[in-house]
Length: 136
Picture 1 (cartoon, rainbow, N blue to C red):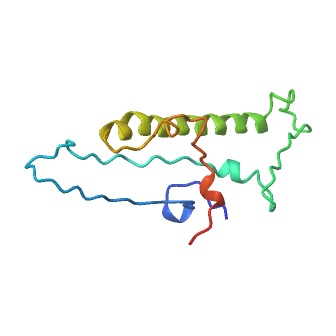
Picture 2: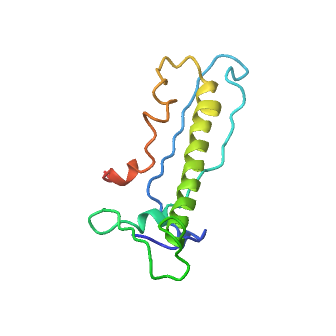
Picture 3: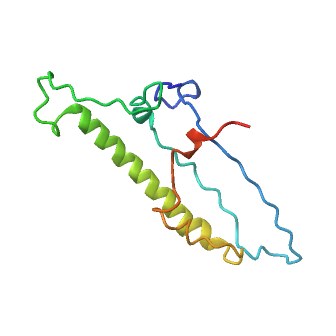
């Protein structure tokens, strides 16, 4: 289902959300990890991308060559719109990557987990993964 692109609750379709809390017990009077910080949410509008999908989830994209503003297969409103959307999506992906590698992972270094694959954007980050998950 695709809804409007406004910021009101009825205009937004949430694909996936998650909340997480952890309790840290220590005998120290101060927090050894420093003060906690709440980061703002980071959202990206992919309505333009979802509208390109048909009922079988195949991409349906065409250039309106009959439009008087269509100059070449590259210089037209359809390609410009997709390139703008991809640029926004790319910037969002980079900001999420930066958050994990520069803000989240450095805070807790002694977790014993190998996060080397997580910090490699070519290997792990798939922003459409929630579209393929079934609600449990």
